[in-house]
Amino acid sequence: MSARRGHGDRRVVISGCSGGGKSALLAELAQRGHAVLEEPGRRIVEAELRSNGHALPWVDLRAFLLRAIDLAHADLASVDTHGACGWIFFDRGLIDALAARAHLEGRPLTAGASGTQRHYHHRVFVTPPWPEIYVQDDARRHDFASATQEYERLLAAWPSFGYEITLVPKTDVAARADFVLRKLQDDLDARGEGIDAL
Image (cartoon, rainbow, N blue to C red; front, side, top):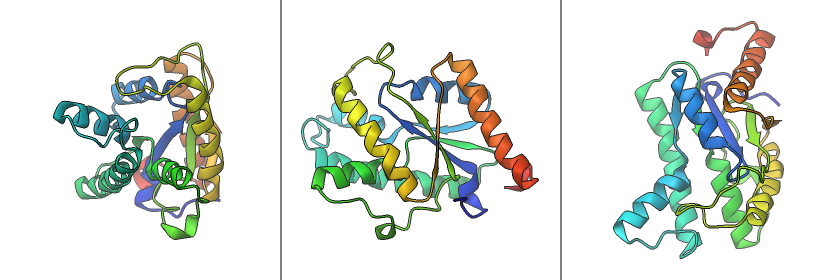
C-alpha cells in the first residue's frame, strides 16, 4: 500500500534490529548530504544519563517509551516546521515506539488507534539481526536475543500500518546506502516523479 503524496513521502524510516548497523547507514546518508534525525531512544538515554534521570529502558521502561513516542511526534513536527527538501531519514519512527509500548502493556498494536499510517514514506528499510557486528554499550544494554525479538515484532508492526518492508542487505555501509537510495529512486521512477516533486 502506498502512502499518500505529501510531506510523508519525503520522510524515510530506517528501522530494524538494534545493533544491526542503522546508525552507520544513517551517518553515511548524512555524509552524502541527506537530512538525518537521530534515534529518539538514544537521545533520551543520553539525556537521562547526563541528568541522572529515571526514564531509562532498564529503570522505567514505560516512562522511556512514553518519552520516545513524544519525541517521535516532535521530530515529525520539526520536519514540517523547517520545510526541509529532499529525503529526510529517520533512525526509527513513531511506530517503533508504539510497538514497544504495546508489547510492554501486553496488548495488540492497532493501526487505527494512532492514525500514524501516513506519516512516512510507504517503504520502510529494515536492518536484519547481524550478530557479527552487534555490540552493547551504555545506551544499548539489552542482549542480542532481546534485540532479535524486537526485530520480529517490528516486521509485523510496520506492515500493519500499511507500510512496505524492505530488508537492508548485510554488506558494507556504502553499498547499503546505495541500495536505499536506489530503491527510493525506483519508487519515484514508478510514479514518474523526481524528488523535487515530493
